[in-house]
Image 1 (tube, rainbow, N blue to C red):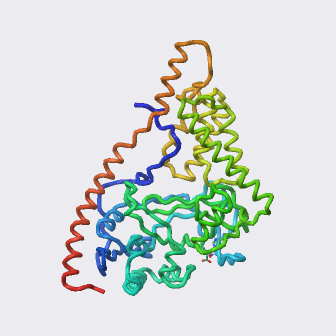
Image 2: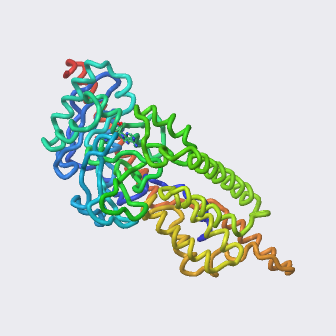
Image 3: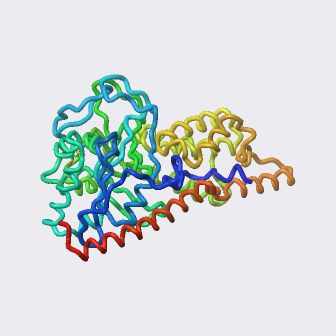
Length: 427
Ligand SMILES: C[S@@+](CC[C@H](N)C(=O)[O-])C[C@H]1O[C@@H](n2cnc3c(N)ncnc32)[C@H](O)[C@@H]1O
C-alpha cells in the first residue's frame, strides 16, 4: 500500500469514471439497416432525455458503448445562463447571460449521433447518405432540427464540422475511433485560449468553465491542442476549414512573437523539469514549478493547468515550502476536477498534500542536511513516491466484466446481422 505512488503527472483513466454494474442496458434497439463491414444502425429512444441516440457501428462496439455508465452532474448550469447569438465572422456562438464562475459545469451530454470512423470514411456515398438519413429520422423532431441547423452542407459535412473523436474501447485501441455529434455542444466556437474546457468520459461530453466568464462574453472551447505557436495552430485549424479569428490569433506581430516565445519556454521548462525529476530531482530548483505556473497564466492557458499545478505543488513540498505547496495543491485539486473530473488520478494525493503538507511523501525530500540516515530515508521516500500508481482493481474488474458481456452480446448480434444479410440487404 503506497499512498505516495499516485503522484505522477496526471494520466486519467477516462473509462473508469462513473458506476459500473456489469449489466447491459435494455432500451437499445437493433441491429438494423446493416451495410458493408458489419456496420449497422442501433437506436436508443430513451437516450438524451428521450430525444434519442443513434449509433452506426459494429455489433461489438454497439454493445460496448451501450454498457457505458451514464455520467450526470447535478451541478450543470441552467440553459438560461447563456444563449446562441451571431458572432462576427464565426456564424453563431454561445454568449453568457450571467457571470459563469470558474469550475461551473456548463453541460453534460451523450452523442445524438455516433458513427464508427471507418464507416464514415469508407462507406459508399449513396449508401452512407441513406443510412445517415434513416438514422437521423429516428431522433426526436427537436434533435433533428438541432442537427440540421449545424454548420456544414449535408449530413456528412455536418458530421465533419461538428463531431468529436471518441475512442470507445477502454484499452485505447485506435480501431475503435468513432465520431460523435452532440447537437447541443455544436454551438461552441473555437478559441486558442478558451474559457471552457471539455472532456469526453466514455461517450459523455462535459464542458466546464476554466475561468470566470462575464455576461456578454462568448463561451469558447479549443478544437485543437492549444500549447503550440500561432503558425502550428493555424495550420491545424485549416483542416477544420476555417481561418481562426480568435483573440490569440489576431494579436499584433509583437504580441504574437511574445506569445510564441512563452510557448517555447513552457515546453523547454517542462522538458527540463521532467528530466530532472527522472533523476531524483537532481539540480531541480524550487522556483521552477512556480515559474511554469506563471507562464501558463500569462499565456492564458487556463484549460491546461492541472499537470502544472501538480508539478509546482510537489516541487515546493520537496523543498519544504509549506505555504506554497499547500497553495498549489489546492489549485491542483480545482484544476484536476475541471479538466479530468472528480476521478482524476492525482486528485486524492493533492487533497492529502493540501490538508497535511508535512505528512506527504514529498515533504522535505530535497532539503539537504548532513545526516546520512536521514538522507537514506529520503531516498527511499523518493523511490516510493515516484512509483507508478496502482489502478483501482475493483473498477478494473467491473470494466473487464462489462467488456466480456459486451463481447458476448456482440457475437450474438453478429449472428443476427449475418442472417439478415443472407436474406437481403435491408437498405
Ligand atoms: C462547431 S461549429 C461552431 C458553431 C458555428 N459558428 C455555427 O454557427 O453553427 C464550427 C464552425 O464555426 C466556425 N468557427 C468556429 N470557431 C471559429 C473561429 N475561432 N474563427 C473563425 N471561425 C470559427 C467555423 O466555420 C467552424 O467550421
